[in-house]
Image (cartoon, rainbow, N blue to C red; front, top):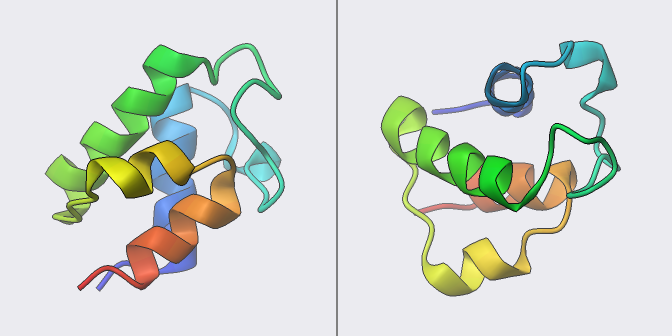
Length: 76
């Protein structure tokens, strides 16, 4: 089962940034690396690397790292 830290490391990897800047409040558009295309790459990485499948509604509701972590940890 993925952990909060695992999710943050994956986000940092996809965005090609240091995990140190990936805090709960980091949101889409806060940094140039996190644009709409990168957002979709994060969702795809969650599925391919962690086996987490989010429905379209969940994907559209995600605005920041905390939302991603919550969606992953509460995924059934």
